Length: 172
View 1 (tube, rainbow, N blue to C red):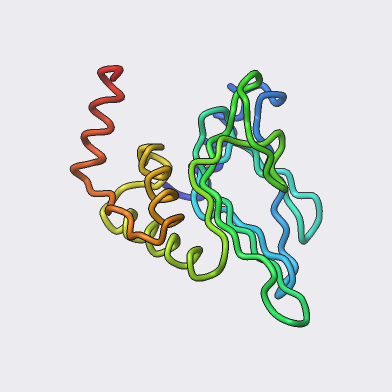
View 2 (cartoon, rainbow, N blue to C red):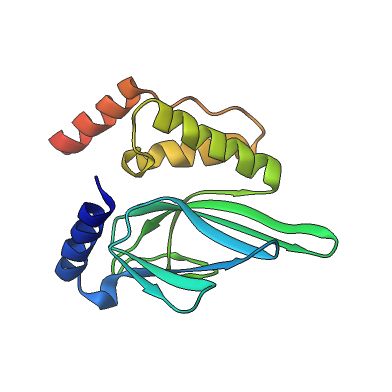
C-alpha cells in the first residue's frame, strides 16, 4: 500500500469511529533520553503536538505494540514493550503511562534483554508473512507467561494462525 493509500485508508477508518471511544497513545522522541514508538499497530488518526511529541489514536479492539525506552547520564533506566488491545468505552482496562484511557495488556516485558527477545519474536512472525496485529491474543498472553518464568515461547506459525482465524470465523 502506498503512503497516500495508507493515509486515505486511515482517514476513512477515523471517520467511522467516534473520537471519544479511541485509545490515545502519546509518543515522545527526545534523542538518547526518552524514546516511545509503536512497533506494530494500525492507528486511525494522528495528532502532531510538536516536533518531539505526537498522539496516535486506535479504535476499540485494535492490537498494537508500544515500546518505551528512557536513559539518564548513567545509562538505560527503562526498557519496556507492551502488546495492548485498545478497549471500548465501558470495558475494564489497566493503566499504562502515555496510553489513555489504558488498555488490555496482552503482554508486558521489562528490561532490554527481554525487549530484544520480543522484538526478535515479532520479526519472526513477520518473516512468516503474518501481520503481528492479526496474531491470536492468546499467543501474546502465552509469550508473556513463558518469558515471565524464563522459558522459551512457542513459535507462532502459519498453521497456528490459520487455526485461530478459522476458530474466530466459526465463533469458537
